[in-house]
Image 1 (cartoon, rainbow, N blue to C red):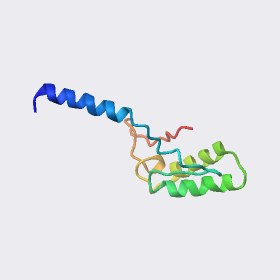
Image 2: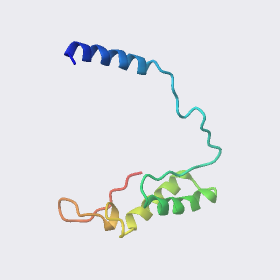
Image 3: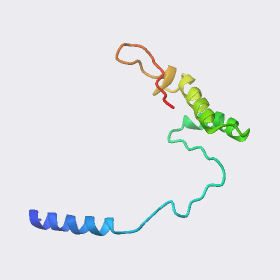
Length: 97
């Protein structure tokens, strides 16, 4: 494919995609709090956070508790006490709320 054709086709495709009116969230409505995990170890964190939410607790408290559970789990080798040491050889807690 020639360079000019490639650029022209890219511009046409980009323009047509950007003019498409699509909102994937328009049909979603939440009537109560939800907790979402992107990793398997988040299921345990969500369970602890949900205890706070289901008792009419504050969302920020639930998030903090979920982070504490994740950081304290030594079987999780990616974050917290079970994670790998930092550049100085120390295992540090780095969750941010």
